[in-house]
Length: 161
Image 1 (tube, one colour):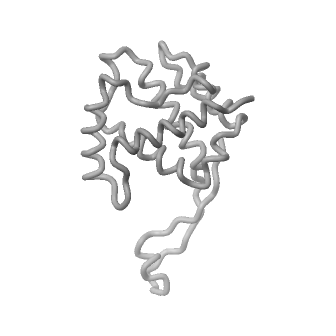
Image 2 (image 1 turned 90 degrees about the horizontal axis):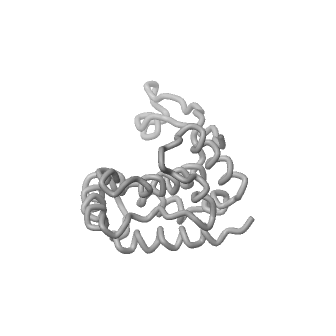
């Protein structure tokens, strides 16, 4: 699994680096953002393959926001590399194997991580709640978020071998 060791430090250590009580930074393994982006795209696609009455809504719109955030970063090109895509799909099929999910659809051109039309209003409400309680700073309106994720999905689905 792609990961990078990154330094972390407490807020106290960052704000008061010269004080005797300040901790030192130490490295921990972190999942790379390109993997997170693909995992979130695939998770939503899988969720929307469930029977209509089984599709969850609560707190899942955060994944759309995360896709938007990572998709607008320097990590996007790495996320769209075929070997990484194949590795993550194989891992999901082996370890997350959900009944009724066709994992072959996760490969281009079959990906669809967008909420179905009959749930858009519920997802919009969930996103509004998330914006009020979880997101600090910039965040797009729901319709803009969907357009951005739709564009990202189109670009993913246009990938060729």
